[in-house]
Amino acid sequence: MAISKLKKIERLEESMEKMAKERKDLLAEYKKDLDKQKNRRICKRGSMIEEIQPETLKISDEQLKKVLQKVLKSKEICDWITEMQKELSYSPKPAPSKTELAKTEKSTADTSSKPEAKTDETDGDVDETVEPESDDDVSPYI
Image (cartoon, rainbow, N blue to C red; front, side, top):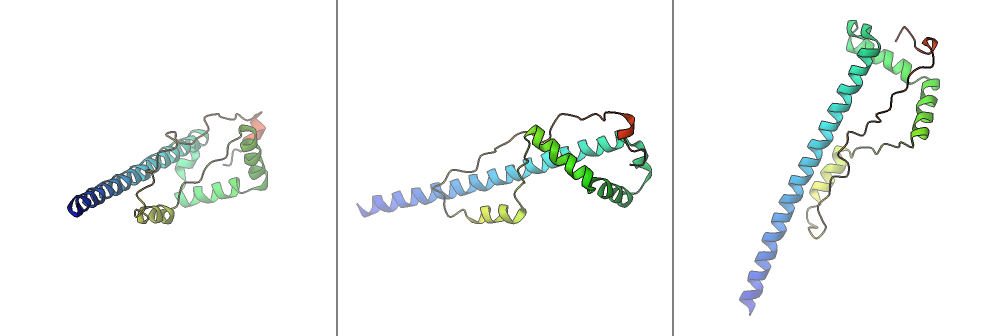
């Protein structure tokens, strides 16, 4: 009788190890998917900048960063972005930080819970484009 209980315990431990490995693999896949989404979003938005203002190709990355900071941090633009988010009912979920993901990986001791499922397969971008009302709304100095 004691031997069968020991075998049962061994099988449970093997099962727990297998589930912990599956969980670790799922987390790695989830991180990889997040990276792919981020890369797609960065490429898409970078190409938008170059399409709207081709002159940005002639300046350095640091200069472009300064331009974007100046434009995007202006109160008018911040208010406009906030208003667009309200209109679209769009509230992006922040991606988990590396420390949050690391904490999740370390908590593999609790294998009774289900592995995390992928929540969103999209890149999180809003596909609607907003055209300026007139040429006056577009700055030639971006």
